[in-house]
Image (cartoon, rainbow, N blue to C red):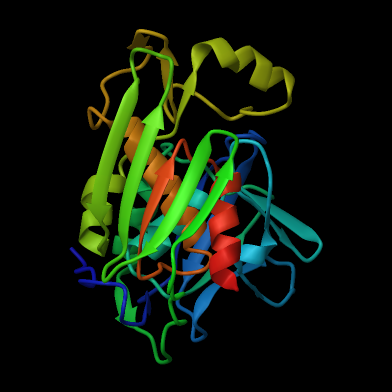
Length: 278
């Protein structure tokens, strides 16, 4: 198996091209993603067979959408990018070309695990240019949306504290603290799957969302229990929330900070990412 870096300081790209195909969660459409080595630092996206130059991803391309992170990339929109970006950033990849077909990244099994497997299949290789500098946090930052809060406090290592609180007994209150490294990400965060609630499915479907959602790519909570157990972790929901946060912060880089999020959302994550971009 390919060895992952010990931290997020070095510059790494892929050793070869690897591809995955799957269905988008919200569009329900099949799409292909090719991940390839790239000489320039950062994450770069282009559309397969379009002839267009790759676009470098940045936190200021994200905008508020329901249930996922969507990027405005020139004349294109690309949705549900967070699991793929979490896998790339979490594994320590700093240089990569992402070629896509369609307007949504495939959900695969609902976690980042399939993307991690693709990265390990391709293998890692040292990049020929330095990685982009991580954002510096020199003073505490805090943002809130309603009762949801995210903070970033200066620290020596990138540490995450996730707290969730749902009125469903199957989930309830959960908290997890993790000092992130590539190996910790792969073992403790990447396998955690997205989840939803049975009593909300009809409303989401009527809104034109989750067209590609199935019991094979998302956990579904039915108040006191799960419709499709078993869980991969007893606290899989809070781990998946941290996965989403990692994916959203990958757009700007992992800061030298402890990031705490209570009842997080993509909008809230993007508030912090936009501030770090400054």
